[in-house]
Image (cartoon, rainbow, N blue to C red; front, side, top):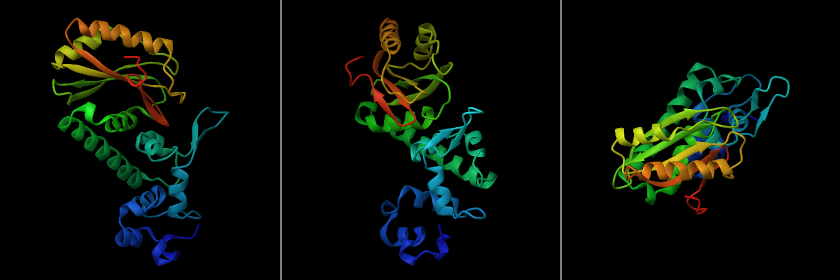
Length: 238
């Protein structure tokens, strides 16, 4: 892969963006613009492509290797996740983490200004950025006001790769504390499966009943995995 400066002018990401707009660039080209430079023996575009490549795991150590599986996976990565990538020094990691946080805040602002029910895709993207790359299960709440706008996002419980303990009393207390009128439940499946389990269905109904006692409605329960998100409400399970 030749350095960016050696590519034809109409193939260089910066020139392409200025001439045709950001939408004309691929994910790798946009990321290359942010990274600016590669490392010895590896151009910046190649580095960007590897970062967006499929994730793998080292069988011996059990540690993640390879890329992050696309933009969503990269944006959900932690600072420690980025440290394992050769060529991502402190400056590049800091810039990527700043972009990630800006993306989260932009989506949060959108959810505070508009009803969650009007922006289902924004809800999914927001949750993917927060939960998609977590190596363990996390249960979280989107607490909403009477207009279904976001009050706050809270991670409540963390478990193992296979299960998490969720206490209805704590969920009810958080809803009361924030004066929520409704909630969206969310948790992740680090295994990558988006299919709700029987335990997920049972938990949804338990929390729905507990919150109904304080007149708080459960609008949805969203399951997040590295590759996407699923709405249990759309499956008729809420």
